Amino acid sequence: MNADRSNYSYGMLPSTPAQYGACPTRTDFKQRVTEPRDAVKGLVARVQFYMHDRYGLSMSRQQQQLFMAWNRMYPTSAWERERDQRIAQVMGHHNPFVTGERTWALGHKPSREGLGGPGTATPARRPVAPPVQVAEQGGSAPVIGNSASKVYHLPVGCPSYEQVQEKNRVSFGSAADAEAAGFRRAGNCR
Image (cartoon, rainbow, N blue to C red; front, side, top):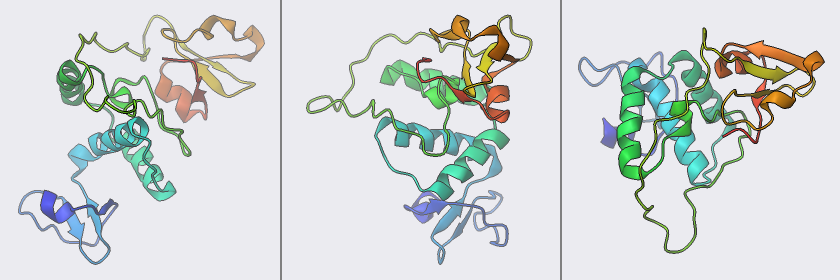
């Protein structure tokens, strides 16, 4: 499957028959498009977000929209969080799109954190703390949105969390709820 996937774009292939036995992954060689199985679509999206963000890669609007949809439709699983924790122990950092520390929106400006310049191709290994957990439904501190700017702030890691004026304050149960309402994460949130 991986060899057939080659460097094809990801996409939806509803009319293409399955080619790999019981695995529902499909590849259309004429269109040069691969559709992974549903169980990994969210993971594929978050890995693509990570690679494009960390290394400053460009991504077409169509691919961004597809991955944003897969990210919403197939949320991070317990297995994916465990996988991220294990990888972080080796790499020295988490995938912020898995932990919820970062989200992707159309026109996302890459952090380019993986491009440290000459001689920094191999990151130094360092202990990794578990990721900061973004408030979820039923959490103690809400995510605060600013109705004037349509920006939201997390209860942990956002210096401007307490600075939203009361008249503009909107509470959300999670970052995902804020994004679903059309808000975007404040740029100074880590």
